[in-house]
Every structure is written in structure tokens, then in C-alpha cells.
Length: 224
Length: 386
Image (cartoon, rainbow over all chains, first blue to last red; front, side, top):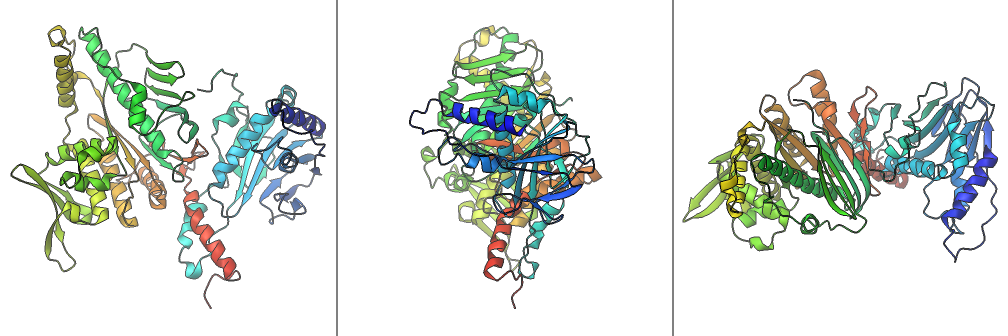
């Protein structure tokens, strides 16, 4: 899957700039990925930390992998960012990780966008990154077929909120809205749903094989 | 009465790239940065609702033997007047019950499914420029200088105040009263001062909060209390048919009063303008009371769309939902509320369903979070002064 992902992304990036005569040669970039089989593990944004897999409880998102999936994570953000200077991927939204199980069960194909800290409108930004990534990948028929062969196709927005710590607690009441947000909830984004993926906001992702997928909608001339 | 589905799709209008509101709930709140397109969405919706209102009127007249439409309008010019000009790529699709209003590069297409359903609609756009109403009403500013929405609201305010001797605003302990001398109306704000002594000042001399609040309260009070939508439509039809000399042909098959579905739509820019946080929450209670609570058994429906920057208003939505769930007065059911964040030219729903039934107001805390993250960095991570 990783090889297919790389070759199809390269084709899509080149097609994106096919009419741009001033663009230079397509750079050769290696894809960066890692595999995890641990029953629980945490991830952080790979561009901010040396090691993406960190001890439980210290990351932005926790994966609970009690079924023992052999999961492979592709650092999608890193890969696309490598094309930014050559303009092939400039202004193209991207999520952090694309992940899938590689043990033949074909249970999970996951897009994960990680976000931590006090960033304005990070959730909307994150949903947008996921939707744009998915729409880009679905531009390839081979990738679409490959993705659709997975039983559970899910976009996760993993936003770790940092609680406000103000002097004498004077502004801590602004934490209250954060504290009523459930640990996992459905995100309704038509672009993601139209691609046959479910979408959730969650910082604890339980891979129990029970996710129910949206049915991909037939392609329409105009998305009205 | 079964709920009527209303939806709006907008593409390439002003800052909006592609926004879709699948199901416009009776109470809808839009949030987002300044200039993100909240007002654009509200203005597009208000024009679509107005066109839809005219479609219903046209259908009514057709049933009354008026074959040629007395309505002539230039859809595109309304957008220009509203400050949201359409481009060649602009697309609008508005659906209300069986009516579809579609605008795209081929122009305007209105499709009615031909059912018997008719609705009497009133659209009331309450502009964020309403702080100028006091000056305009006191004739201190030339009305010609006012933009379209401000002139509309001024007309609504003057109409409202001609229907009230005085308007009590209980939660502020003040009264708005109109007096007339030599044909000139003057608007007074009366109340008790800090020293418990009564005061009486002109509206244009009141505080900025009072000047922005009272016109809003007056207009909402009038349209939820005294407005006779049937009478208004009868007057409009009579005027239109007289102007087109077709009154003699009119053979109404039903009276306007027999049209059962009636709706007043409020679209309010920045309800929080110049108001302290407590007054903002009182204002929301007032709106909810006017639109939903006190009309549960009435003949008209009300819809409320707000564009706001206020964390108090957005967080208050969760209290409204909780009240409704517990059967406490002043609530709004989760199904009847939605909030959207308008970002990057798109609309993102802030509803969290899945049984939780809340509005995600956490983005309204981010600026405070950012402030104290910076503060704590400067203080070596300490949260208290030593």
C-alpha cells in the first residue's frame, strides 16, 4: 500500500502542475513511515518531535490497538511538504498521517490530523485538512479502489486542548466549554462523507473493528 | 405543523467559497473571524427568503386569475444593493418546502413543485449599523445616507414605535417612549438613575448599548406581538394590483387569512453590539421568549439567525438546550438549534450530536487560552504572581 500511495501521489502532484510550464523537474522524495503493533501507543505530530511514537499519556492521540493490528503510518504531511519548495504541493492541504493495517485483514484505513495547543479555529482547519487530503487521494482511481477495500475508512481529528491556567484562576471559567466536549464525536463534513469515510473528533482511537462507514455517494456534476 | 425543510448552498460569493447549510434550524448562530462571510450568508439568505415570499405571492395571485406576474425584479441587482455582488462563478441554491431558487451562470431559475402549500413570510434584517437609528430617527442624520439594510430597519423601527405608546424593557429597568410635537417624533429613554431619581433623555443621547439595543428590541417586539401579517399582505397585493391595473381581474379563490403557514424571519448582525456580557444573555432570553417561548400555540412561526463574535452568546446556546431538555422555561430544543463556524469560505457545524446534544463552543475560549499561554511563558510557567 505504501508503494501505491507514493506512486499515485506523485502522479497526482505532477498532474496538478501539468499545465504549469515554468515548474521545474519533479523531485525524488522518499516516503517516511513507521509500523506499530503495540496494544496501546501515543502519537505526536512528527514535524514537531524527533520520534512520532511516544509513551502512553504523553502524546496528542492515543491508539488502543487491542486486536493487535500491524499498523503502518505514513507521514503524509512530511511527504507533501517535501514538494513545497518545488511548488508541486504548494497550497495543497494535508493531514498529518495516513495509516492502514498491513497484516492482510484490511480492517482500517485512517487519516489522522493532530493538533495541540491554543490555536484559533484549529478544529475547522483540521477538518479542512482531512477533507482536502481525502479529495486529493480520491483523485486516483487505483488509490480509491485500494482505500475502498478497507472495511473501516475513517478520518480522525485529534485535537488535544490545553486547559487555561490563569493567575488566581481569573479566566479559568473559559475552560468550562472545553470540559463538556465528549471524548469522541461525529464530525459531519459532506466532503468526507461523499468519499465514503466516517469522521470523528477523538484523542483516543479504539481500533475494535466496529466503525460503520458512510456509503460513498455517486459522483455528481455539481456538488449542490 | 410538520417542520418545513429549508436549505441554502452558496458558492463563490464574496469571501464564501462553498458553504452549505443543509437544514436551517429555527435558531441558527454563525461565528467566525471578521470578514469571514457571516453577513454574506445572512444577506444571501434574506434575499432568497424574500424572493421565495414573492414566489408564494405569485402563486396566490395565479390562483386568483392574475396570469401576468406583477412582480419584476432584477435578482442580481439586489445583491449589489446588499453589498454582496455576484460573480460569473457564483451559485446559489435555496430550497424551502417544494420551492427551489437556483442562481448560476445561466441566470435565475425558480422551480415550484406546484403543490397547494403557501406561506406568508416576513424578513427582518437587523443590521449592525443600528446604532445610527437613534440619529436617523431624530432627523439628525440624512436618511439618504443610510444603506439599504439600515433604511429597512429604520422603517421597521418607526413602524414599531407607532404601535407602542411606550415599550418597557424590564431587564434593564428602562422604557422607550415616543412623543410627537408639531408632527415630529421624539424618542425618550426613561428610567431610574443610580440615585433612584427618574431620568428622561433622548434616545440619541443614551449610551451606545442602549442606542443599539432599543431599536432591536422595538422591532422584535413589534413583529412578534403586534404585526398583522395578513393585513400587510392584503395591503401589498392591493397596491401591486392597483399599480398594474389588474385589480378588476382578481378573483381570489381563498383569502390571505386562510393561508395557514406564516413565518417571521429575524436575521441579526452582532446582537452583542455595545452590550455587557450580562445584557447579552438577557437579550438572548428576550429573543428566545419572543420567538419560541411565548408563541408555542400561536399561528406564526419565527426563525432567528444571529452572526456573533460573543463567547457568551455561543456558550449560552448550551444553556438553552439544557433548559429545553429539562423542560425549564426559556429553552430551545437541540433539534431547533445549530451553530456554524465560517472559516476558509466554508461553514462547519458546531453541533455535537451522538446523544451529547451540545454546541461546541470551545473555539470561543481559544483567544483567552492564547493570552494565558503567552502570559505564562513570560512568567516562566507560573500561573500566580509571587
